[in-house]
Image (cartoon, rainbow, N blue to C red):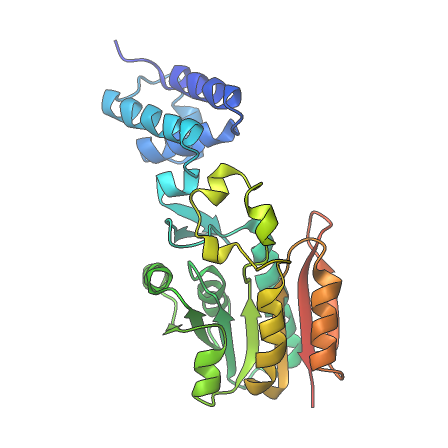
Length: 288
């Protein structure tokens, strides 16, 4: 006789806990393999589980515990701003903190630009496309482009834009170079660049360091390499009235803010803390 769903779930939760993993992963994986919502799962806990689904579910539980494969890679997506984004080894898994960056950008765009003007936005180092796609969907009046140095990452981002119905232009290139070479100006530059210092990579969870692209994590010796490049390149691509929005690592806020103040002495530069009380976002607002 088939085992009940609640029995399989209890085994998985206990197994994951013993291996230092979050127990909630069991529910996510089980919903995925049974193709049901969490509400449906809770309503069907005493139902027998399909044997094939049980076997594939237990296989993924072991992959997560033993091989540290991220649950997002096992189920194929991560939720961001209420939408499912495809993810794989070629892109950084979107983090909840980045949702706060998107919210901050949307708010500041509404304050800085009049409603009847087209606002050109570029998301630099787009990865899965989470930022660019979300901005395009949340404010269809924006003209959104996304840049990434990796063709593999851009392929994932394009898939997400198509699946979610977002109008985003994708450009393969190194940071702001494609815009500079095309002599192209924009109103908003937003980026969540790599910002982890090289020496800290080794101490990251194996779920992160063994399965997410190093290029999306390492920000050079002190983690600030990409911000230095932004400070140099931004003046070549921004219009007179513009917004810069950068996600930063905890403890980097004031250093990055100082770089932007030096580049744009008349800009309003602010460091904003995330919901966990960490300096996470730096904004620079330029006005005529």
